[in-house]
Image 1: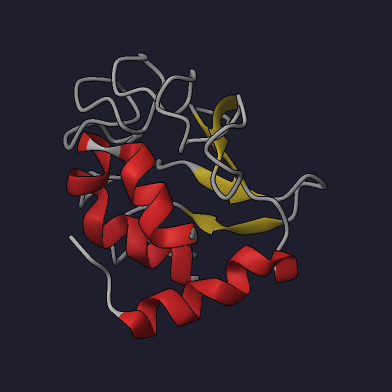
Image 2: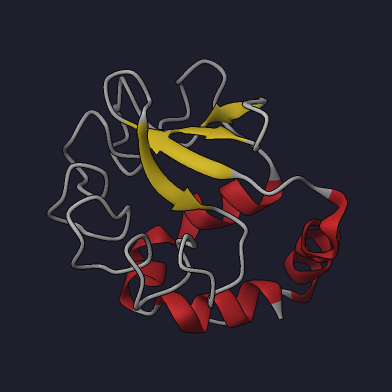
Length: 139
């Protein structure tokens, strides 16, 4: 499961605060909060907090719940559906749009920043141990 040192270096700049705090929103009008993408694993709003609402693989609105609307490989609202038509969006606190959070490589305006690409690639492994992956990516 170890990430390459090159990947760690690429993400290092993301961790240092050179980027905005990013949030995921899903649903028909993208008004359903799905958690903070780059907050630490102790934040209650973090997708990396496996005991919190957004990091739990059991919460119905978590992107890590493989049976939920936002975590299923089959839901058109899920980032993990390779044909998703309405995946979550990534925005900052001011509403600045960073792209659609999706593994669908053909989705226009797909988020392609480094952290998103890592999550796309390893999402199935991440959902099994969110906290450990947070440590791998951010520490």
